[in-house]
Length: 149
Image 1: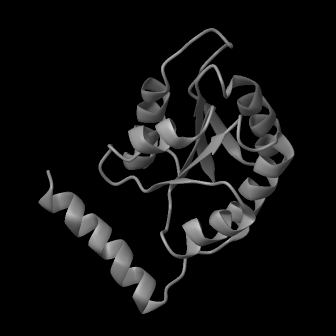
Image 2: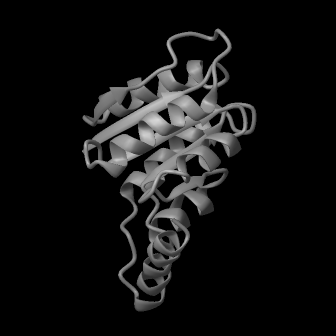
């Protein structure tokens, strides 16, 4: 599995720890920045990562900013992306099973790095649900996206 990862200045330090964690678990990682804690703009990194997922260059995207909210909003502007803000073990699991999220976002000012690594582990081990009720809802997301172009 190939994972694209990006962060703004607020997520930079967590990004590097997440990369080390992913590599330790034999995931291929594409680091799309930021390269330091110098002020940077989260929409730039969110768009880079989301486009990697949209274009099937990476299987999953991970984004980190201060709250995870801005990254989620920006990534969801890219057609075909289902970005989910993860704040708990429950949201890590349900974003995969119920929503088939392909980009996950985190807040470095919301959760500890230990919590985030646990959430990533849960997300990666969880399978997408093939239950008709979930499939129907995910299909609707794509339909509504088409209608609102």
